[in-house]
Image (tube, rainbow, N blue to C red):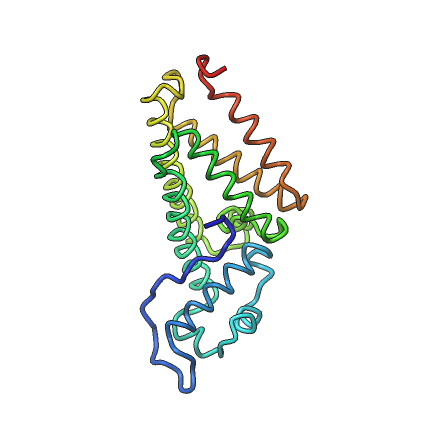
Length: 219
């Protein structure tokens, strides 16, 4: 499941009665989430309007307001959907018992690059994109985005602890600090790859980051 491939929708309780003549409710919700993620990972939140999402999803406006109070409510739902999807992505890489811990991290970065390449490096990370726009977004987006990033960091820190336990990573490193540094750098690399429409920033980051945590026995 590459980074910018679109996840299935996250079930959400309808807010109003189903609009007359609307498509199947679950299909409409999934289409809206999919269209929202496609557009926001490429264009961002501020430059995409509800009408553009409706056109891409091919659902009537009533279906949108059946699930979401407004665009901000929709944005929070997209963060939730992306977080659910990303948990599966991390599971796929980080729980691969056939690989050593640091090889699982490299698997994740390869999967992410493949996902970006599939879309010509025009789609980035939803969380990173929204973080760049935070000054113009509703303030409750801030806590949601920080919460997602902290979850990713905790999972990566656990991977680094496993690497220490098997001798892949020096015990001198603080897994939590290293995980935070990874995600700060990785999100920057994603942004730069999207800007330049090429994978080189991803390669540069992974090479540089890797040189700082390889144990002497591996050198």
